[in-house]
Image (cartoon, rainbow, N blue to C red; front, side, top):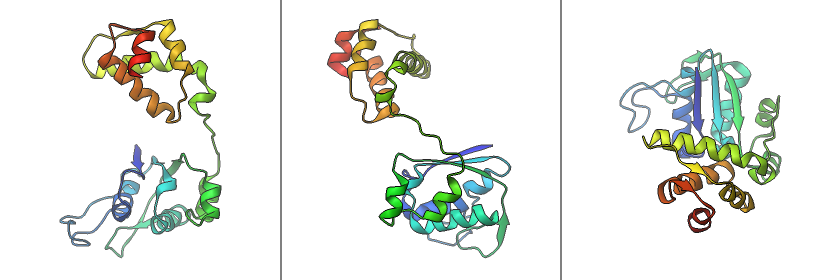
Length: 194
């Protein structure tokens, strides 16, 4: 299985329970035993998105899990063997975070086996036509509506934008254009709604 965890979306006090699970009664809302994402990903891949936002204590436990292939649930004392491939992503400069004391250097080296740098959308403006069509299809299909088209002029206008929020921002703009734009998204729609 592929199991995804957005480390930025989970409060720091809950991330360890999310990753490693917990025993019944280990904290106030722990009314039952629960498996964590490491156990759920057994034999597969655990994707830790925005790992740069993870707390220091959770980083230490992730490092231990990677080194020893074992975890311990929150509130538990039994070690559980895990066989998981970990893939991590972040929008932060982890070397800078290490220097600031916000990210463990040993975890960085453990994870940094095959680094893949994905250039920002501003560096890949030629991808905008394909991404626009992809997101138009996806958003219209999810919304059970006819797939809208987009004019070449609208694409050119999108290529002029500064995409500081990268793909997430771009997808949100396309969704806004689907909702507020015409049957064919025009340059005027982009100027007005993007």
